[in-house]
Amino acid sequence: MKSAKTISLYVTVFLFFLLSANLKAQDLLTLEEAVSIGLENNYGIQISRNLVQQAENNHSVGNAGFLPTINLSASQVERVEDSDFEAGGESRSTSGARSGTTNAAVNLEWTLFDGFRMFANYDQLGMLRDVSDEELRLDMETLVTQITLAYYNVIRINEQLKILRDNIEVSEERIEIEETKVDLGSGSEYDLLQARSDLNADRAALLREQNRLTEAKITLNELLSRSPEGEYEVTTDIDVNRLLMREELYQRLMTENTQLAIARMQKDISSLQIRQLRGERMPDILLTSGYSYNRSENDGGFIRFNETTGFNVGITARINIFNGFNLNRRIQNAQIDRRNAELSYEQQMLRLESDFLAIFRAYQNAIEMVDLEENNLQNAEETLDIALERFRLGSISSLEFREAQRTFLQAENRLINAKFEAKVAETELLQISGDFSGILNY
Picture (cartoon, rainbow, N blue to C red):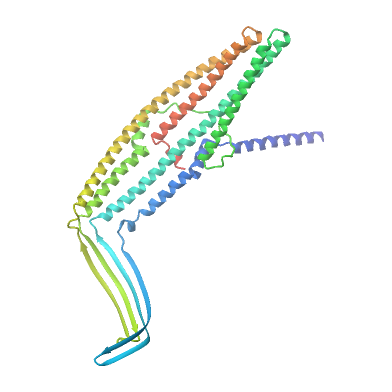
């Protein structure tokens, strides 16, 4: 019986820990999950997707002008009239005579030739659709960057909170040592009060950092279009990719960068606008056709009833002979627009190359800084251990120990900040080189 109770107790404890671990795992938000949620729910991305759908709807042969227009019209008019008529010595009067007319027609108008403008229109609509696609991709890349940096900022603050909690434990141990010294008569009340003041300062720093964590989590929730009160946990380390290659990233920049792709498309669109304008120098040829039905009735007239039906077809050709040189002016302005688009592309390329060089140098410096701060932290940790032991033995003062403690705290903070800065540079390099394709396939 006792063995059964023991087994039951073990099973209960095991299930409790299993349930706790499961709940904790459910609260964990990975970076991949955050990106997926953001790309699915972010309001800005949803708006961009709707704009892409609009551009896709606009890219049609009907919108470009290839298809005919067909109009149906119909009317019915009823009248009641009094009339007096006199001719050739005869007169006639009617009162309350009813009359009515009925008309219906179907008309077709089809542009058979417009100087190839409809082809240029269709190509332009396709280019606008492609630009909309690239703008959506750019918005997604920007969002992924923002989510990534916000996510690692939460990790950074979490790590700094751990550092501050560890620092509080050291400060509490310092107070215990000071209290022991006072009890033994080898310490001073001044050093004890100073130790307690330093502990309160450490606790205040912890509270400020907790506020920063709350703000950082709210920022990430906003990017994910989730409730700002939503709670979650993040992973516990900032992994920096040390293997990014400059030449490989630069080649991707030249071929995959979204902003460059949009600038190239804008050049093509400006060329299509010139084609459209030049097409206005050629004649327009239109096919018109229709079928009509007309019926009239008049109780007070000589013709009491009339009905006609008929089919018509025709060809219309028109060409602009002179419009005050306005077409030449518009073409010249369109050529200037195309040149401006080319200059904007060159300017964009130069700016991206400059940004890439600056970011890659920042990435290299950040990697070196991480290595340096890791070495500094190791030295500061060893120094703190030695200082703590000497402080117990009374060979160093309380202020000297506090200085060692502060040095260790600063070394830890500098390391976590160096890792974060390296991650920022890494993320910006991936964005500028268009290397988010794996994530953006979501």
